[in-house]
Image (cartoon, rainbow, N blue to C red; front, side):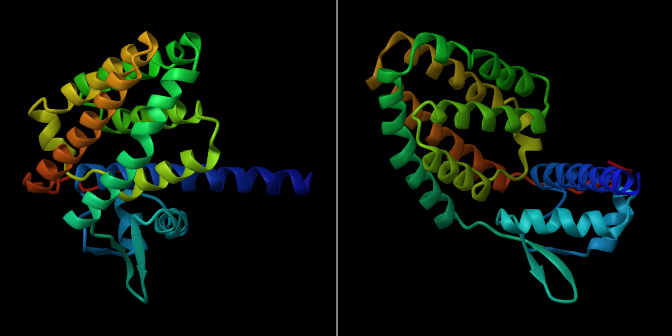
Amino acid sequence: MGDLKQHSLIKAQERLRDQVGHALRAALIAGELRPGSVYSAPGLAAELGVSATPVREAMLDLAREGLVEPVRNKGFRITEVSERDLDQYTELRTMIEVPTIGRITELATAEQLEALRPIAEEIVTSAREHNLIGYLEADRRFHLSLLALSGNDRLVETVGDLRKRSRLYGLTGLDEAGKLVSSAEEHIELLDLMISGDAAAAEDCMTRHLGHVRSLWAQGRDEPVGRPSGGLGSGV
């Protein structure tokens, strides 16, 4: 029984670590954790209402994703992404994803593509309901699930890493202006084009979509982002 209790304790700690990681990602997206700023694990833990240990573990997970970097004896710095970085990430994604979308259009069945429609609709719904975390999570699932139809696991991993490194900041202002809905609707347009078998049009749509995302990111950087008076929230 002792081993089983220990196993349950480990599972509980893992769940808390994941919950803290989710809360920190949400704070990054909302602009509550600012690029270039250093945050201590105890300070974040106090705001989240948890101990420092799961916060440190979650921050190490974020460090492996390139979202933060450890600062000796101080905590973690939120990594900054330059315009040059963003341009290069977008160029790489375009080089990889656009031709892959064309190939998938020609090879995938209508049933395989249609199975992704609920996720595409979830992206639109999340944008309309101002659910930024839901929006980005559904967007991630849609793109990576679509690329998985290529059968190339390494390609999916590479794009997943590029997406993490080119994450969005300050989406709150864009959401309030209603600028995310049009980007969300492009997912349904892309799916319809692929199901119709028009590979060239699907590639054009994907190129436009990536350019749109890059434009939204640039606008998001220019939006004034204030830290809410409630900080990161109470608990996870």
